[in-house]
Structures are given as structure tokens and as C-alpha cells.
Length: 437
Image (cartoon, rainbow, N blue to C red):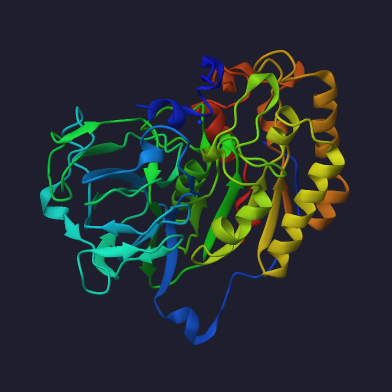
């Protein structure tokens, strides 16, 4: 079925590639200090990561890349003296051959073409000493460490060449940056002339970047939906609230260790349902919305390099798409919290934000808002005793005159996603002490 225009904000990759001050309650949480000689040795830390899903059922993400290169820009959160890149074929249906891979810095002087790179910063990535490698079906591929000075909050450009057909890709559908795809091996091309496909969406096969740091307090992982994926933010502006939080950490504590912030959000993701399940108001399902959140923990959260803190902001899609009960949503949030704490992580919860006015009739109803409020009441009450802290994003974004609606100054226009100012307000509302600092 065709995708109604009203849903394109959430599922942009599916559309583009067919040819998506708070009240705070806290406890101390686990310590982030390892101490001793181990803390004195250089440590690998996650500086960037993305949640991945299977390609959709039509378009380029389904057919895959065939003797094509893809150039992708990512924003680091912390810096280091060396880097390594993680690729993933987790959702692939066959082995995938990586013919060539490079990393570089973007040429920001050529602002008319964001695909250009600074030639002197280009370096080859190697895998076991080779410039090519094969990712087995369902497997991850880790590059060799590369001496490459990475700064905090800087853009890096990763270019991958796939010499033979990959089949369905493993990808993240809401990158909010322009991606560049072109024929043949363009991994060393300084300009973007050969990149003829330019969707404002997705990262393909690229799952993470780690840096080697003299000291590291680990990383904060954000497990969220389109609020964390910043569907209402400006493309190529790096205005996701987790990215803005990373900038705030760097600015507030420039002379001390700061954690990486890894945004593992997935637009449209739900606690209790698969991405392919349709939702209320005629919303179609997509692979890119990902599996249920509990199924994501072992792939998107626990394996992240140096993860110490988990921020969980999920449940609103279970309400408006699937009309789940408050009890069912609370049960899943409690289970995520238990699993995080069983692995020694600091675990923070986030209240569900308002969305009256979003979508077709039936998407928002007074009854569904009552469910949202019931979840938030539990989070502010009994739930606060279970989690290590609470971020009250509902209090940040809601309109005091109409609490079931977003404050107009923070509304991206679809009445569910915050705009750039709203994302900044969320980042500013996070008490740094809840992150162990």
C-alpha cells in the first residue's frame, strides 16, 4: 500500500529509497570508576553508534548495493588518538563483501556539496591487514585500529565500496544527514561528482565508531524512538537531543573525563511490538522501525563499547499505534530496568511526552492520553524507586495551558516531535549528576 503523506516524517527512508527544567528523582547508581592500573591504561570508548534494522520490503534498502559506494557522515561525541569502525550485516540474507573502506574529514569549505572530503585527511580502513573483507551473514566486522586523531564533536566521513550485490542491507533509516551513493569504487574520491543518489536519510552497514582514550568514564546509551531520532529536527544540523547533550557535556566539563553519548534510538520503535506491525490511523509497518525494544537490548545496548548508563524513553508508540495498556508498558519498562541493572548499568527512565493533534482520528484520544498519564504517574511515583533517576521530558515539552499538547514553541509541526528548540530544551534538562558526573 502507498504511504500517506502524513506518515512520511516517521518513515522517510522507506519513501526516499523506493525506486522515518524537569522534575528529577535520582539515586546514586553504580560507580563509573574502575580505579587502579586498569583506569590508567588507554581505553576504547564508543564515540558514535546507530541502531540498525533490516532493509525495507521495496527499494534500494531491499535490493541492496551492487558495485556501488556509499559515503556517510557521522558526528563524534568524544575524541581519542586512534579509532576503529564497526560494520554490521546483522539483518543480511547473505555474506557481504566489503571491497574498500576509508575514513576522512568533510571539506566544509565546499558547502554546496556535503559529499566532498579533505584529501589530506583520507585514510584507508583495514581488516586483518587487508583493505577488503567479507561480513558473514548476521555478523559484525571490526576494522583494525587506525592512528587517527579524533576530536570531540567533529564530523567524520566513512565511505564503503561493495563490489558485488549485497542483498537487503542492514541500516538505520533516520540519519537526519544526507547520504551519498554512486557507482564503482569512490572511497578515495575527494569530490562528490560520482555520487548521484543523495537521500536525506540512512546509514547502511555502519554501526559504530570507537576511539582510544587515555581515560574513559564509558558511555551513555539512549534507547528511544523518533523523539531520540529527532524526526522533527533540521537535516544536516546535528540537532538530536542526545547529540546536543554530548555538546553540553563537553562544554560544561572541558578539563575532566566525559562519557560518550551513543544514540540507539529508532523512529517508530515500540516496547511490545514489531516494526512491521501496522498501527492506528492507517499507519503501515516497516522493517526500519525495528524489533520490539526488549529484543534490541542484546544488540543495541549491552554490546556498546564502555556502556555505563542507559536512558530509556519508550512507550508512546505503544499507546498511539497499538493502544497498549499502562500496565503492559510499565511491565516492559521494569523489565528493561532489571536487565540493565543486572549488568551493572545505571538505569534512567523518561516520562512520555504529549501528542494531541498528531495523525488521523483515533491516533490520539482522551483514553490514550489517560494511559500516557498513568505511565507517567507510575514513573514519578513507584517507578522512581526502581530506576536510578527520572528525566521528566513531559514537563519540559508540554503546553501548561493544554498539557496533552506540545508547547507550540517546541512543536516541529506534527504535534508529536520536538523541533530544534525542543531538542535543545530536552538536552538542557538532563542533570549531569544523573550520568555519574
